[in-house]
Length: 209
Image 1: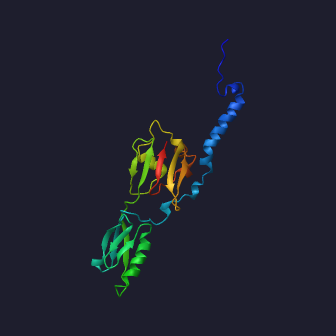
Image 2: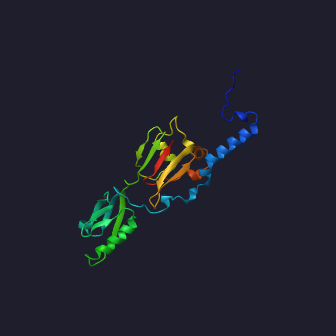
Image 3: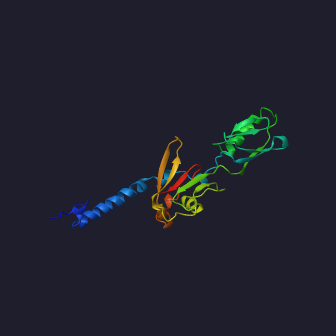
């Protein structure tokens, strides 16, 4: 007499309520991380003065001092060089913070305080990566801050193999540790989770599995 093989969950065939419970618990488990994440805790850099980074170009003007007025590019080590003053740390600081130090250090060489202007002439340090199941992944460097949805659009959108509802932003915190921010792309598009449409920060990796 032939024996029938017993498949996993075969004993649940006549218990539809049990199967529904299993399906529901699986769905809840997948959504728990995204539901519990505090998206409001992530920064919105548009609300603050721009923080300088490598490759940004600064226009430094010292009033009535052509020789001291220069365009300076932030080097990979985060510094710039100015006449008289020498090297200054620029990366990680705002133009206002940099201006204050320039004024202070110039006072050592110039008797009368001169008005100083520091303007960001070109933003080149805003870079992030979009990878995974997108049409055109790679590194992007737009001249303005973009949201998660806009970053995906720059990469041509998800491809047919992707699972955009399981997307993540890989972000390095101030403590140097990388964290995973779960993103449900469909929930952004249908308007149910606008809080997930975070501003992409420099160095972020946007990933669609």
